[in-house]
Length: 67
Image (cartoon, rainbow, N blue to C red; front, side, top):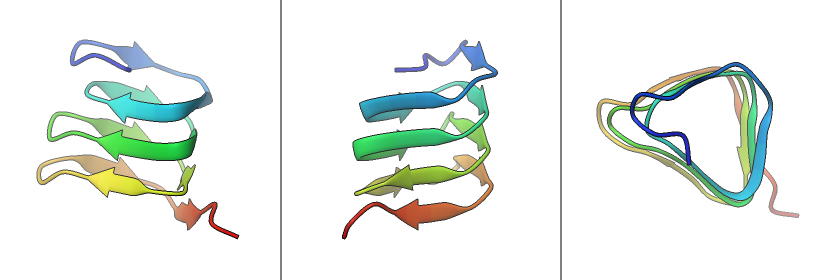
């Protein structure tokens, strides 16, 4: 979980990734990546499930890990 005041510049990998702050880098969640209304992701997102709340800022590509 990246909290609302969090500002991370890195590759973020976990089963479930929740972004409430800012991520400058790619996010990969084996189960889910969620960007809340206060979240910002400047990078690519890859996961089985991607949730983007109204007001969130995703800047990058998105791809499914479902095979």
